[in-house]
Length: 256
Image 1: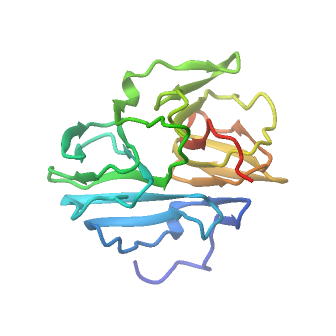
Image 2: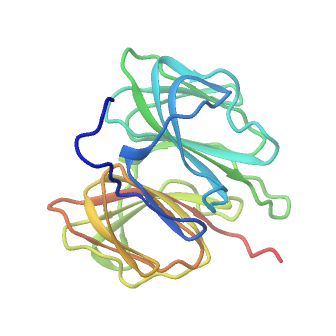
């Protein structure tokens, strides 16, 4: 990388336990024992105040898991192919699947997720895990799909904001992944303040996000962490769409 041109600077905003914006420029690679020949950046963890762990990874040709990911008892996981090229070969409990651009997979707790890049070029992906909260005797199931096959729905009756649900909404699932898109001039219908936390990765566009009492500029490749009860809303500011994929905890009461 070499010496910087001018003063060191960053757009990162970190408020542990509340919110964070982490641009790609400041990320470092981490060694994950079960993953080899991949560049892995941990962008959210309990050390930030999140109840989940999220990674952005780049699998080099032949790179992937050397042993099952998130194989600990009670841990669920999710993987999403970020790039518009390449594929990832995955297995969940030995069942093979192929992720093409826009492809994703959810592995329920007590499942073994493995992945590899069979191509000759690097492939970027989002990886996520959290502890599953059981309800009664219900159990979630493996889910695979592609975001390009999901029909957009208008968000809160707004004609320029669109939502895609990636996982089933039934109560056996305690989380979901969504893709939210704002056309130019789009915004949230109100400032949200809720118990759920989010981890959002910006797929395209630019915006200005209200986090707590700060308005913060965000753009493609930024990661945003939203803690519980943090005020949040966005305006699109670029010439094109603003789109991000985000996690949400759901379908569970609060434990006392």
